[in-house]
Length: 449
Ligand SMILES: Cc1cc2nc3c(=O)[nH]c(=O)nc-3n(C[C@H](O)[C@H](O)[C@H](O)COP(=O)(O)O)c2cc1C
Ligand code: SF4
Image 1 (cartoon, rainbow, N blue to C red):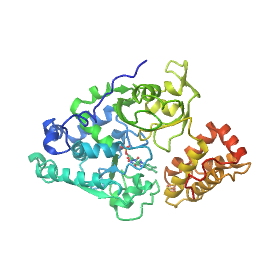
Image 2 (image 1 turned 90 degrees about the vertical axis):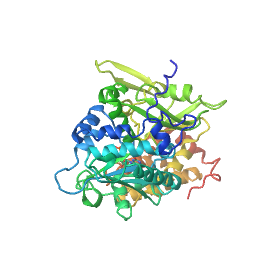
Image 3 (image 1 turned 180 degrees about the horizontal axis):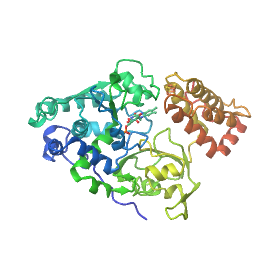
Image 4 (image 1 turned 135 degrees about the horizontal axis):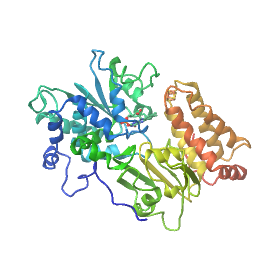
């Protein structure tokens, strides 16, 4: 079956000719009208609409946005903060930057509606240090919105006031983890906090209740209010509502950003029809569906899933509908939407070595299993690509990974273990052959320390 048509909600105007990221252009397309409508509603009704819409976070974990908002401690008497996670540090993910560059007012409107719904008077956009242009664009756009009365004091003439500040990170993967991000926002090293007690909804920024949401998630809030939760629920599949932006990179003819209703497009349709298939003379070998931490899928493997009526269906990688639940049932995750494609030119031992070098560099070092384990995974994969593999290395590296996940302060532990666990499990044959061969073809071009 050919791929369905793209369903653009977040990217509706982004690529239109003449569309620019300034306020005048945004308003020509109805910009800030939803905010004005929202300000006439009761905040609790907006929260209820978001919950009803089924919106799940687009930053990685796919957690229900409405449920997260319902955890906020509203009785503490402390200020409630909203933090926009614009760190976008997951390798293979590049959608938030595009939204910020092309349509910053969409994010600002979604943020202001979310602030109003949660009685927030101060919001921060935490943007990674490597996005200086994005930070400048946001600062300019916020000032435009402030001057026009959409941000700041007495928004749209109401008695509701709320301001947004842009905060630039210094550039570290762990700054994207919500509690590390909060530490960094407080001016400290981004060491993730232990949960409990530091659930941001109760003890977040400055020990106050805090909501942390991804850029794309907050943009969806605007559209949920615009079309109503019932209409929004019709997009996608049950429990996987709305659209998703897929950032496709790697070995396809047409990499890029594509927005589809959740679960309405399969991996095969995305990679073959939409992205033009593999390069000439090549075949797809593997795909990581949700950023580098997601477990890899090997073309050729199959998954037996249960249908609602108890019957079973067998899916090939190409058949997997791209939604949170099906990807989870296939042992991986939708994560951040970063789809990394590898063709048969890729050596999996080298690919894993590259990923492991990244995670070893980015561990904050607080937890022994993560700090030591990520380093050992890097060391073992590094000696593999340098032709110094030992007999036991395939098993050894997997056992190191197995001893990290589930034993750490934050989910970085899982993020760094899953690639090794899945690469070795699914490409064990290749690891064995590679190690037996011991002659590396590309050790000299890989800069692995
Ligand atoms: C190591 C690590 C890195 C993360 N990086 C990001 C990131 O760059 N951007 C993001 O939105 N979420 C990131 N997350 C997820 C956040 O902790 C948090 O769950 C998310 O911002 C919540 O927003 P959402 O519910 O709207 O998805 C990361 C999580 C971990 C464990
Ligand atoms: S799991 Fe890793 S990144 Fe997370 S707190 Fe522990 S050492 Fe730091």
